[in-house]
Each structure stands twice: as C-alpha cells, then as structure tokens.
Length: 636
Image (cartoon, rainbow, N blue to C red; front, top):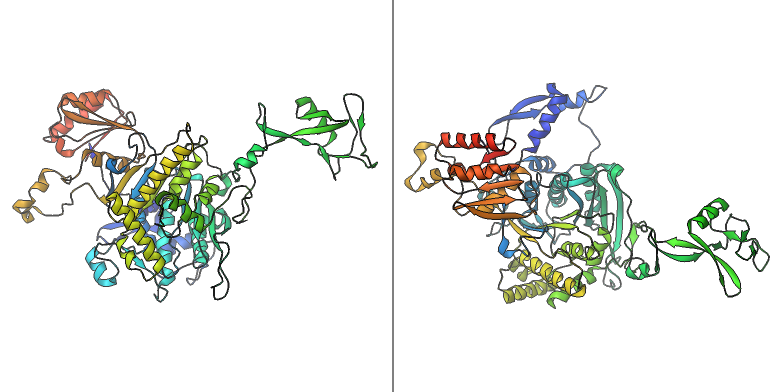
C-alpha cells in the first residue's frame, strides 16, 4: 500500500514534465530552495527552439513588476497544510453543499486545486483596491515567520500577514500586483472550460489588473470592463471630480466555449408576459408596424382585406408574407375583431434575456444593481448597525449571477468579506436553482481596526465588536460574516414560505498538516519525543480531520454526504456512498478489513499505525486484491 503525500502537488515540476515530453533537450537539473535536485528548464534554449529566427538580446513585449518572478515561483510551490472541518460552527452540516473556508486564500486555493479542478462556473472577487489605506496580503512562505518578522516588521503579534500598503512604499504597485497575480493564476485552474470570472476594482489598479488578467487568462478571453455606478449624489467635497463608479473586469476561461450572457428579468417585467402555452410565456402584441418593408394584404375571417390604413397608406407588417402564413398555421398569429375593427396580433414571447451593457446605473431598467450605500443597507437589516466597510450590494451579485448559471453550478468568492455572495446565491436559488457557493476569507482580527484614524472605520469596528460580544464570539471578521449568512438565510426562508433552498454551509479552517513533521536522526530523539515514533499523526487530530484531509489528497469535493458506523468496535467512515471508506482506529481486525473490502469502495484509507507490522499490511493488501481488486488502498 502506498502512503498519501498529504501536501499540494508541485505544479512547477508537473509543467516541466509536460515540456520534457515536447522539448527534452530543454530540460536539465538544478538545486531547488530545499537543496534537492529537481528538473529545471533552460529557458533561453526553449525560446530559441520556439522561434524560427536567431534571437538576440532579451527585449520582449511584456508586463512586469518587481517581485513577479517570486510570485510565479510561489504559485507552484507546494505546501503542507490541510482544511479542518468544523461541524459545530456549520449550518446543516450533513445536507448542505455550500462551503465557508477560513484561512489565507492563497493557501486555500492551493489546497482546492485537486478537488475543484475545472469545476467552478463563476468566480467573483472584490479584492483590496490598493488606495493606500487598504490592507493587502504579504506572501512569503520561504522564510520562517521569525525571519520574516525581523526583516519586514509587518507581521503583528498574532502572526497576521496583512499590512497597510501606503503609497509611500517604493513597491506600492508591485506588492499589490504580486498579491493578486498568484491568486488569479491558481483560481484559473478551478474554472470550468466555459467558466467566467468577475473582478471588482477601482481606478487605482484597474490598468495593472487588466494587464495581469491578459497574461493569466489570455487577452483573447477578455469579455468586458463593466462600469458600475456605485454612488449617486453628493461628492461636492471632491477636490477635482466626484468619482461615482467602479469597474468589474470580466474574463472567460475559454471564450470560444462561453455561452451568451443575458440579464435576469424583474418580477414586474415578467408579469407583462401573462399568457402561457406549451412553448412558454408570451403576450399578444400588434402585428402592424408604423414603418417597415413588409407590405401585403391580409384577409380577415369575414373577407375584410387589411392592406391600407384609414389615411390610405399601405400597412407595414412585422414579418414577411411567408413567415405570416407559417405563423398563422402554427397558432403564433391570430386575427380578432376589437369593436368594429379587425386586429392582427402575434405571440410576443419572453426572450432569453437582454444582453448586458458595459455601463449600468442604479436605475432599475431590468434589475437594480445597487450601490455601495445599498450594500450597507443589506447588512444593516440584519444587525441594525453598520458592521462592514463598503460591502457589495446583493443586487449587484444577483445581476452577475444571472449571466448563464445553470443548476448545480459552483460560485467561488475567495475575498468573501461580508458574505454578500452567499446571500446572493441563496436568493438566486429561491426560484428553483441549485447553485452552490465556496467562500474563502482570512479570519482578520477586528480589534486593531478600533484604533483607526478614520472615525467611520472606528465606528464600524466598534459596532462589529458589540455584535460579536452579544453573541459571545471572538472579534474575528469571519465570525461576523457567518452570522450575516445565517440571518440572511432565516429572512429569505421567512419571505419565501414553501420555497426550499440550501440555507446551510460547512465550515473549514486552514491549519498545518495532520501529519507530524519528523526530521530527526535516531540519535537526536529525546525521551519526550518518543511519542512521535508511535504515530505519524498529530495527537489533536480527529477522524473527521483525517477523512477530509484524505479528500483533498485524493481530489474529492468537500460537500458530499458522509456517514459513520461502528463495526466490531471500529469507527468506519463512508463518503458519498463509497467514493471513499476510511477507518483510522488502531489494530483493525481482519474481519473489519474484509467487511470494508466487500463493499468495494473506490478508495480505502487507514492509518499506517493501524497495523502492527509489515506482514499485517501485506495481508490487508491481499484481502483487497481478493474481494475488491479495483479499490485503491492507501495509508496515512
């Protein structure tokens, strides 16, 4: 039986393996940062092999910044982390398919690479805007935490990696570019072939963001740069021009496979189409047109000929004579008498939708897209206080969710903040949808924000802390966001009786690997370290921790149902009706192994320490070869 690696894959080595198959002469060896020999690419030779002219110099058309190479390396670097399930903090743990993940989104995205590769239909993110006041992530996983703290001075006493990127920083734009680049590179892998990403941004970084997106997703996959009027009125205190807009960049994973976009309709608009037949909704509309090119006589049931109007002008019809003849046979056109006059009418069917425009305002043309102010009002309704800074409005997310989502599609937001995306997905499911969300958010400490120099930021932080104190919860942003989602679900259910939707979410928290890190030689062990030899699994980890760690390793989604049962005193976990069966007890008897094998799961996993010696492990392998030859068996 093989052992699970319990770390994310080395993407750089995987890419090099693919290049080696095409250009073996370009692949050599070099020592990595860990001192081990690894495969490497001779980039100069590769560039020359891909060119039909002799290359000289190193000029190229490209967008770059200080730290870009380090950001590329960071994307590919594996990590030894895991996601620990938290059923007690979840809602409807056993039945929900929604996920709420607390942790650094760069590391979380790495952990999701196998389980959600090519499975996400839509990504929406609202990253920090880099105005000089926003906090951004400082990524450096090569240095130890102590080394980093000493060199940068930008890690607080809690080890948080957020720092305020002020505009007097010499790497003001570079730090932001590195932060967003690595996350977008990883998120692209999660998008389906017909997936799409929406990124909110303002003027400060929109140019750099577009350059990065052109590189990550490809310039040919650019769809639009939407302009959202996020404010209306006021602004008289602006020095030059009152800025009332933000942008939303839209990119496809593969624009050739992306379907058409349509705006969703409001209930008021839909009510106009009050007739329904076997095809769908419609209303009867006049076939006559004031101007056009379709002129021909139409004969009414009593023989009246409609060809000229009361002024003697030829009547123009909506469609050609051939189309008219076909439609009247199909029942798509009727000729009825209204009063003393005949009227020709056709079934005006509700269209799939209106193609969205790149500039949209707060006026409710089809759906109201909301403003920054209405986003605050959305949250205020649940807490009766302002507790988040500039949350995105639900109506904006509903507008974007209407762009071609199908049932069972997954929506990802890895800068989830106040949890607006979760509420929008729940509301979109009220009419029968089955969309699922994955939200990722760093558990930021709210307390430091209470000392902000901004009176408004300080007020909001104080409000947030007061709510969390009432709930008896720690002063962490994710605690507030989870409560917002719970209260939103309660209100949606109350407002829509009889309309079921998934109101729950499974909570996971980023943590160090479940496995003990043992790097000592035999002579270096002390008496109090001997416990490390007894098990390679950390003592504080539960069966559920181990089960979900295996799911990440094997690339299984985290939202499927699972059950636990007792078999001869051993706890056996079954995930998604046999996708994986695990038992993490010590000294598992052969009878339990045989019972698991008889169920013929796709995968089976045990602790390495579950078996006394190598012959016992070999026997387990033989049992599965006999009873379940197709089952993949591994040990932790």
